[in-house]
Amino acid sequence: MAGRAILQSVKRERLGTGLLSMDSAAFSLMMAIAAYLGRENPDFIYPEILWSFVALLGFNLINFTVLSKRIPAFTRARLAVLANTALVTGVIHYSGGPYSYFWVMYLLPIFTAALALEGGGIFTTVFGIFALLGFFYRDSFRMGLWVEILEWAIKVLTLLTAAGVMVRVAFNERRLARKLMAEREKAAQEHLAAREKIQHMDRLATLGTLAASLTHELKGPLTSIIGFTDLALEGPSTRDSLGESMRYIDKAARRCKTVIDDMLSFARHQQGDRKVADLNALIKECVRLKNSDLQGSEIQLDEEYAENLPHISVNPAEFQQVIFNLLTNAEQAVRVNREGGGLIRIRTQDAARSVLVSVEDNGPGIPENNLDKIWEPFFTTKPAGVGTGLGLPICRQIVENHSGRIWVEPGSESGAAFRLEFPKSPAVQ
Image: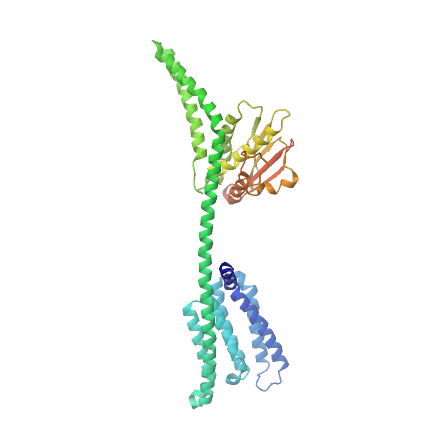
């Protein structure tokens, strides 16, 4: 209930000045019609009062429509206070001066000031209006007509009471608005922290699936290192044979370092820092990791990279997380297809205003009734223990945070094709 009240107050705070402009315009239109119909009224100076109402109507319409899109809200509020005060003063002047019943229209600029201005602006508006109202009673003050002076005082007290109530309401609305904005900011920060944590956990889970294949990847070069080291230590050897053993050891050690560096680069938790990066190079790192996972299977991974692909501003770790998730999904899909070998194809393209990346497979494809559901968190068609249903939602969120888009289409050889599009920076278009 409290949250709903705060939200309603913020909406009123946001729309207060605009709604007041609409109400002022509607009231001015009715008064203009009344002024025209009552043009024989001896207290009216006609047609001046009619034009005053028309001017008040016109300003509030322009303020609500045209100026709201071109002038900052605070500047527009100050302009509205000044214009409404001047036009209402003209209405009062042409409708009888101190005897006019339109003095209550001074509430319009007071309400506008209370809703949109700070304390100093409200104080200046209220006491400025008191001075203008006193201007119409200047003869009464000069001649000491206490009945009319008392009438002025009653009008001032009425306006002051209304102003006090409106200021109190407006300040309460602002306090609630600030409270809601603070809660929204806190919620946004918590959401961002939770999203980053989930993304990091997803990356670590992906690394877990690579552990067995990477163990095999490291076992080969480590066996070579041990073998050539034992050979060098067995006994005397020529300088040439020792050098050859050391070259094999060096090559095997560098291979181990490359595998470990790839894993650390992929696992490293980076904040949302972006830099201009070569997407082809980032994808190739993911492919190297995935190829080690595909060793011994009949799945073929084809690569097709556009030459001179423009570099794009991305978070490298997040981009690679998207690519690896899509490659993993494609691998799991083609393993379901038992007929013949599986095929995964990854491709980059240079479009007019964007860079395209596609990951296709020849698996069973995605049923049409699931095309929208796959982007929902925790939705998965995989067996229990295989997937969490968070991979694709995280991919979509990462891509959209990079001002890109991701969608799925039928693949060229059955299966599914995931398309990614990232906008080029102005410098490379």
